[in-house]
Length: 273
Image (cartoon, rainbow, N blue to C red; front, side):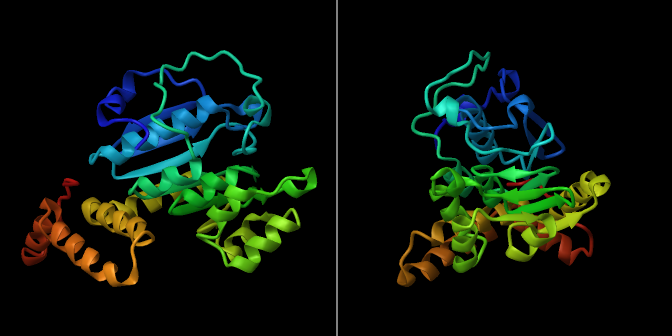
């Protein structure tokens, strides 16, 4: 991880320049907050997102993350001027990370459900955020576009992230023809989980959160950790690893509570441990 557990423990006393962070009832909401720049990601914003997701990773009391944005654009991708060296002052108190912030990798190590709440257009590198989430609830007003080839650029990292959720031929076609999709088409492609009317977006996200919270946060955390790890293992290592993870999960407090609740014919009281 790019930050230590001790570094992220002070999250609620830190100052964020370009995101907002709210924790309530086991849910961490991370909101992109650079609307005047179309929520384009500069190094400080990326560092802040990495910091918030690292906090969620380390904190068992966080059972899920919602990723949202302020303004009329969800994210226009990378701030090319910032990465070209045109910096702007900010008051962020988030420490420097231990290495480079690679947005596409941050979500792989989150090991928590992450719901993208997409109310508006997503462009270019914003796809890294969308593809990193486990669920995407999109307003019917949202659009998804990759204009890079129009500017003589190929969306290299976006391509890799898209390959995790879309068939390869569709990814390549989208990249090479500067693809643009409305929310319904994005759902057909696998980018979006659910499309709702703009006025129903908040309630749809909350409904999904409520549904996820019915089930063991520990089992879900362990399952997502295993899903991440499987990509690194040879076929002859996978079942041995999964058997180990099953043993760890069965030994958890949540599993004991789940079995006890089943025997007592009641709803379980999860603690996330």
